[in-house]
Image (cartoon, rainbow, N blue to C red; front, side, top):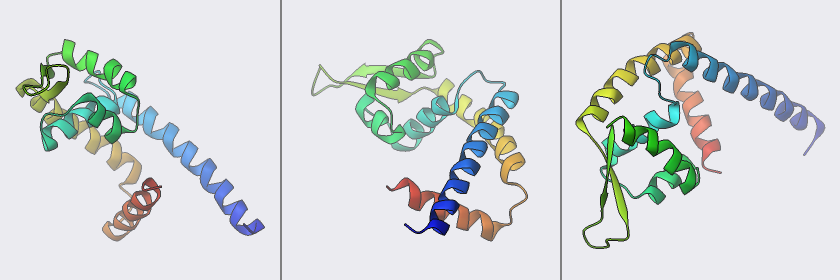
Length: 141
């Protein structure tokens, strides 16, 4: 890697670190729901994909199954998801979203819109599309 590219990657690292902090701060300052981004991502995944095993949720969120257990515990207690035994394999459980979870997801979309409008609202549609493509390309690593 040449020195100019190394400098650019270093600058990108600093920028992404700052952006990550800013996203967390914005989320926390607008959070009226009491749930993290990861909680909302679980609800969205279950709403879109249907019931899933904890291992599938872990793979989607790029966390451990232990992490999924911690995240889903709060959602279970709030009645936003339910855990059922798989009918074909009683050892395996599946998690599905409840109606209350669907309603919470709808409320969270408003919060996501506010946060991301404040972070990326200055970008036009083409810039947003390009940024999304770049992030998606990097996430495939």
